[in-house]
Image (cartoon, rainbow, N blue to C red; front, side, top):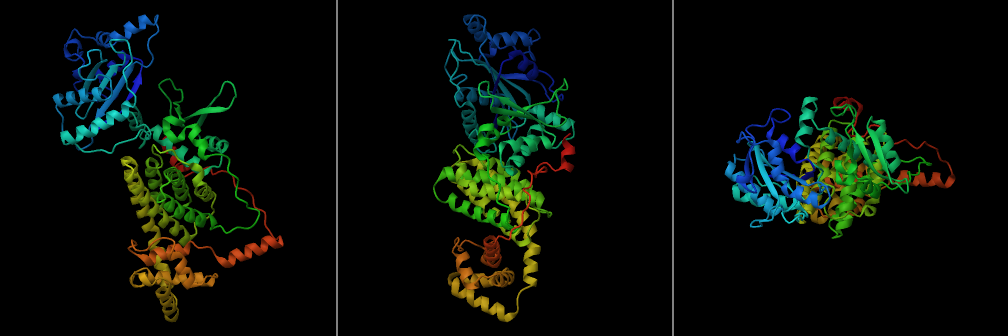
Length: 564
């Protein structure tokens, strides 16, 4: 059961909508199921003498009295509106049951506490099987405003109780950090235009993808505009600094033909200008004066994700929340850099994880600077480096599962569910990408004498896990990876001990596969030594600093055309 609280200032306008046919003639038999006083609430659908204006005057009675006291100035945002919808698959509720739902919600939110004879006036209108609309005018009979602090959260809490008592599907509780859900009008508009998502949702995905890729605020707005998105900034009257911004999607106009604007904070809480600045402070471009290994961004991101898992276990919630926000950005860039069929699953994971990237815990974004910077380099990567890219995906799978557990332990139900959904997409993407790579590694396994030597190394370095490692179907692939590591300067036995100590192996179902990707992510020692020699001797090669990406993961040109 989902409540959605909002406020407005047009009592009659909302009544006209609630009792009207709906924007798509979807309203069936609109009628009042509950009110502050059923005898005093004229129902335009049942009483021929009742009109919209008459009902509005009755609801506005206390508002009008207060307006006269204020010398003709009407109290602002005096209309309170809360649609309440059952979940798909829930049973049909009778009018009497919906009436009880309405009374409990206006009591829980402070609109009309039970036995309070000076409470606000309200009605509950039903015009569909699966939901009602509760509307109230929020001026009490004594002229005061009701105590509606955290009314949305209190409505959600009451809905959780109602679900249990009415035998309805239990939904996850929120903490007011979720983005706004699309309105009925937004969904209807998307359907009319043949779009699969609403304009608000599309803009939100573009904003997240661009913010993940760029290094500063100026680039954020520049890249959005390059994607055809209109940007309107709001300047402070004294300083002239940007204090807010709004976005308009290409072709998204109102009835008058004007662009439809959405402020950053209306798209998602962490897309407000202040929240963006916390993680988009100017970041220095990586030093590209010397020839670098193009695989470095993938390797650095993998290392930072392993660090994130450690931070989630550290007890520092602010740092952990910072890493989860950075991980959300990283997923967009990982998906954007991917080139195989698994890219679809990675994009779905990035979008799913958006709900898990924030909670009521204030994030320490500085703590996760390493992950954010490393992941941003992926937006500029020129190629996907085979096994190392799969090693990165393997790390994301485990971090997503750890994120779900972290949120669950703190009672963040919606975030935990979102992280689990992202985990499933990442797991599917990993399996698609890993299967051919592991098969190729196994096909290229070294000769028997080398394999026997590596088996001895495993028994010496990881004695407690040796039998499981050698029985793992990925053992053959691991031998190829060990052979390659040896050719680039690693001692296999020492390397196995090092990567085995990075994190426990007891819970790993396939320990050889785990070790394979940990070793894959290790740097090439001989290449590192060569780069150091080049740096000392001064033999360097200049390379241009790439511009911010113009096609982030959520805004490929071929897909943008669907939303015009």
